[in-house]
Image (cartoon, rainbow, N blue to C red; front, side, top):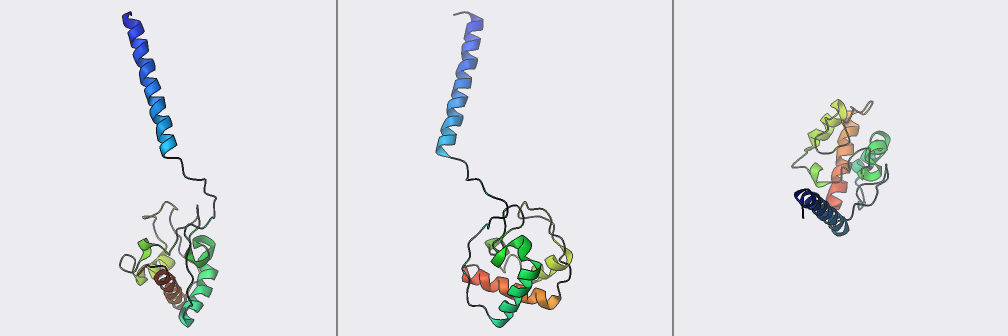
Length: 143
């Protein structure tokens, strides 16, 4: 076999091995199913809510649900779920919700982009929204 034929054979062999490896990887680790924009990110259990949390749910539905989804489940392509370990009280305290609503938030845990300030929401509403979120979190094992 000539030197140029050995070179071509080596290239073909390497390409064949790469194709076999890629095919094997694709077979062993199939891609995730296609996710549709706006689809809920998590599933949550809904507890019986306290009076303050019921008020918070009303405010959440008015100011937050269009992005964070009904019952804070998040929405693919829009905003993260708030019923998630990232938002547990020892990582994001209650004041984080107040500051997020008042000032907005720079994206740092998720790739949804920055959250703008929430226009028109009062501190009392934010307090009740936080109570609502915390009750949902506890009902879903996030303490």
